Length: 119
Image (tube, rainbow, N blue to C red; front, side, top):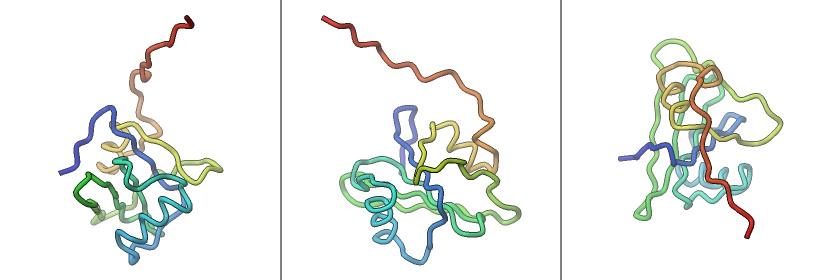
């Protein structure tokens, strides 16, 4: 089971991936294109060319998880606009994406980070 919490790091690839490549191929995309470590425990989200399927790759210290969601009707409507190879998502945005919604319109409370005081 993949745990999805507010602290989960989620990376979404902008460019479509070839879903025939499987776990090893997607892990290679994580390393070469996204410049991230597929063994980090983060979730890596990929879409196919027609935006009808999404795959999520994750590693949990015992092995890789590969999950896929394919829509019966319609397409995943959102693809991040940026010139970067990948962008980050918040947990609530991923849940909205998987439900067929548009994560770009999801409004949430700003992520709080403690401020480091200078000593």
